[in-house]
Each structure stands twice: as structure tokens, then as C-alpha cells.
Amino acid sequence: MRRSRAGHQGADERGPWRSGTSVCATAAAAALLAGCASMPDSGDVTAVDATQRTDAQVRVFGVPPRDGARPEEILDGFLEALTSDDPEFSIAREYLTEEAADNWEPERSTTVLRDGPNRGAERARSGRDGGFQYTLTGRMVARVDQQRAYQPSEGAYSEPIHLVEVKGPDGMQWRIDAPPTGVVLGESDFLRIYRPVNKYYWATEASQQPGRPVGLVADPVYVRQRIDPVTEAVRSVLSGPSDWIAPVVDSVFPDGTRLKSPTKALVPDDQSRLKVPLNKQADRVGQAQCVRMATQLLFTLRDLTSSGVDEVELLRSNGSQLCVLDENRADSVVPAVTAGHPDYQYFVDDGHRLVRMTGGADGESGSSAEPVPGDFGVGEQGLRSAAVSRDEERAAGVSLDGRSLFVGSLTSGDGLKKTEVRSRAKSEEERLSAPSWDGRGDLWIADRDGARSRLLRLEQGAEEAQEVKVAGLGEGAVRAVRISADGVRVALIVAEDDRTSLRIGRVERQTDGDSSQVAVTELRTAAPHMEEITAMSWAGGSRLVVVGRESGGVQQLRYVQSDGSTPSGGSLPALTGVKEITASEDDRLPLVARSDDGIVRLPPGGNWQTVVKEGAAPVYPG
Image 1 (cartoon, one colour):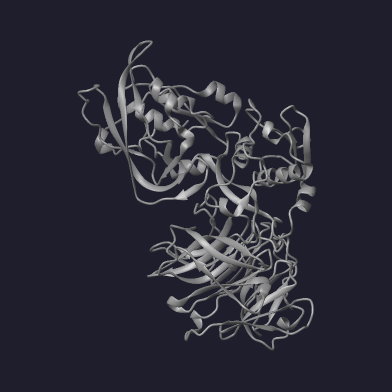
Image 2: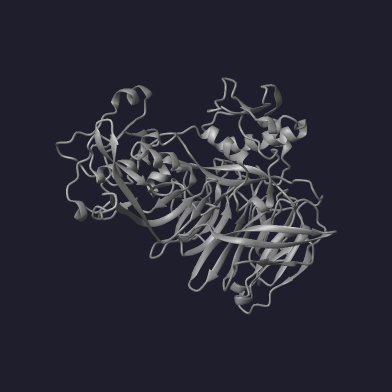
């Protein structure tokens, strides 16, 4: 049983505290019905941290306020109820006045604090209403907005909470008449209650053929993982993309499409089919549009590993079928812009050639490397880094001195094409970064020439490069670039002052006849707690693997989300002296890195294994 939180305030402000509020947790439905009881008024109470972790299978529920509860008990009971698995926050509303309960909007936002909300000292009773006022304080970590999008936020949090006495059935009772905005909770409670899910929308302006969508783009959101996440994820898709990604994606659901009222919950049947009843706005969509709508939902539900959904059936408002889509057909609907399940992993060997090796989830098969077909595998042009296109038919490589970029075929020996990209930086470390291919065939690279660093794009790997303006870069210099498969998000390592940080930017294209202009906008930090990022790679729709360290810490490897969140379980086994790392969009394939031990691989659930002692620049296609 989880007891009342002592972490809402310091002990020196309150002294020993005994509460009439509690929460009751259990993993079985029968125990839920039988096991909840209020905490007694007498006896010892053990104080526990407000944000202690709870087992993922345990559900937590609040209890209503007891009669005669003091103002501080009401406030603490309310904060405790915010951390429960109550679908509608009905228990939390019982701590509010009737008017406040009607007006409070918990879905408006979720404020995440480092160590949970602390209750400041109470003010004296107000002469106007005889009420009490407290101030909730804490250190901000993030806010989750009404669209369920996560936004890192730093700084101090402070919000007043007011209580008044109201007439109840058994006399006067203290209740909150001015609650906080939305939900306020600690970081570990947030990680227990919420889970990240990618919802998907179609990319726009990302194809050589105007108007033709190229693929799906992941839009990460957070849903309450034990409060019907399937229905919540579907509702989130229907409500449209989050503000940050909205300029570069489209939803094919007609405006205003929602679940048919009064649908409360969506549950797959014993055939793993999920029926989704829609309102009248979707009644007249054609078959092709409906299939694309179902594709958005099915890809989203794939991210919910516990959803059990293999097939989606969309229904009109009268209950008739619009369309059906299963997983096999969904894969054929989405153009192959990712490297899905690549045939090989690549790196530059000690002879400065591009080589490849096979290797599945066990990380062991095909541990020997062979030169790639074509001129990149011959070794006449020595390489320091390389990138392989997502169809594994072309490659790009940076010369040993870091000055020049070459592009060539992996299927024929037609010779290497030297592009016009050339760095004039005096230091080798400030010349060309490793290149990166997006899913539409464009090649990206950074010229790291000190304060004159440039982000460059070569459309379809052409000889001439276009400089890409990066809004919000300020005095920062781009040190590394990795473009996402969908081509609408780019990950940059940016050096500024004494810090290197990971930034994610939105890629916006404007087409004018046969040419297109590209810019990167709205940079946001993806690993806000790290001050020295040394390597990174995309590792899925919205996930990256990052090598770096926190202030005063040691090097660590972990997964982070592109929205700046760090889900629980993101840490990876330690590895000494990691200099480069790469990951596949298929999380069943091993991570590959260059470390003090050489080229190494980490199969899922396994340990790091050395492939070769000498080598550099490991890459998956992309």
C-alpha cells in the first residue's frame, strides 16, 4: 500500500504528519475491490518519498477526503490523488469545491517536477473568507500540453493553492476552491503513470512528385499507460498532430473526425481486430483515403506493444464498414523510406575502405567484414567516414583529410563522383562531418569550419550542394548531422561555449518549379540534462541513441526521445571510450559502435561484443 506523501513539504514546516488520506495499490482486480481502506487517525505513519517508483503492474488509487480533515490533509490528499490511476480524476475532484470541480481541467496540462510538488508554509486565514492559502513549489522538468506533447522546461515552479470551508452533509468541510493548473506531479510518478507513444501522420512536400506523400512521420506523445492507452492513442491521432510537427505533416482524416459518441473504450476482439466507430465527418471518405487513415492508426497502435491489435476496421457513424487494414497490407501502403531491415552494417576498416557485415538480432552471425561492391570497397580513395543510402545502392564518403565528399554506386564500378563540397578549415577536426541520407535520396553533411559552420544538402546526391539555413542556431556551430528517414526532422550536435548539445530541427521545404528551398526551423534540445554530446544516431521513429555525459559525470550511453524526454529504461550497458555509434530503425538489430575495444555490437538484451579491433565510422543505412 502506498502511503500519504511526505514529500509535498519539508518536515521543518510541519512536524510529524498523520493523514486521513491514502492510496491503495494492487495488481489484481479482486484485490482492488477488497483491499482499499483509509489510513487510521492514530498510530505511527512512515514517511515516504513523494515520487517513489511503483512496480509497473501495480495500479494505484486514491481515497476520498475523510470527514473533518484539516486543510493540509485536503491539499496532500488532492496531490496524492493526482498520481493515481483514476481515469477521470474523480477522487481528486472530491477534494475541490463544487464550482472548482466543474471548472478544473486536468487534461489541460501536466507539470512535471524533479522531486514532486512541495507544500510551502500556509498563510494566515484570510479576513475575507477565512480560507487558507499554500504555495506549491518545485524544480521544473517538463510540461505535457493538451495535445499530450512533451516539452522540456527548466526553472522554478510556484503556484498558489487556496482552500475554504464549505457546508457538507456532516457539517463544515475544508475544500480547495483554487486548484493548480492541470495536473502537477513528480518525475518518477510521471514515468510510472505515462508512457511515450508515436502517433503517425503523412509527410508533406517530401517527394519528387508534388502532392505525393512519401511516408509516415512519428509524432511522439505521452498517454496514461494503465488508463486505456489504446483509446487514448486513437483519440490523439484523430485530434491531429502536435504543434511542432504540424507544418510538415498531414492527417488524411477529414477535419472534425472523432470517435462516434458515446464511445468510451476501444478493445480488440479475439481475432486481434480493433473496430473504430467514427462520427459523420468520415462517412463519405473513399476507399483509398480510408486505407491511409487506417494506416495511421495501425502504425500508432504498433507502438503500443500491449495493444494486441493486428488489424483495424473503420466504421461509419451508422456502424457499416468503411475499410479494413491488417499489418501485412499496411507495410505495402507506406513507401519504403526507412531502411526497415537493412541487409548489412557498414564501417571503414583499417585500410580506409568501406566494408560491410551481416548480423541479426543475435549480433554474432556474419561477424567478419567484406569490402562493399564498387569503388568504395577498393580503397583507392581513403575514407574517414561514410554513409549508405537507405536502399543500399549508393554511398557517400569523406576523404581521409576531411576536405572532400565523394558519392558512388554500391552496385557497379562506375567510379566515384567528387562533389563540389569542400571544406577549407585548417584543422582536420573542423572539416566535413560524417554524411547522412534521408529516405527521399537527399544527402546531408556539415562543414564544421569553426564559427563558419554550414549545414549542406545535396539533392539526390548531386554534385552541387545547397546551404540549409538553421533558424535559432545563434552562436552555435554544427558538429554532426543525422537526418531522419522521413526527411522532415534533423538531429544536430551543436557546439556552443563549452557545451555540445543535441538539437532536433524541423525540415521545411518550399518547391518552386523544379527546384526546392530547404530550411531547418524551431530547434529544440533533445537531451537537456547532458552537457557534452559526442555521438548520436536515430534509433526509430522518434528515438535516438546518444553518447555523452552530464555535468560532472562520466560518459554514458542512453536512448532519448526527439521531444526531449528520457523514458525509464533508456540506459544502455557501459562501454569504454565510445567515439561513434549507429542504430537501425529496426530495434531487433544490434547497436554498432566504435570504442577503445574497436568495432563492437550490442544485440538486444545482450552484452557488447567486439567485431574487429581496428575500424571507424560504423553506420547503418541512412
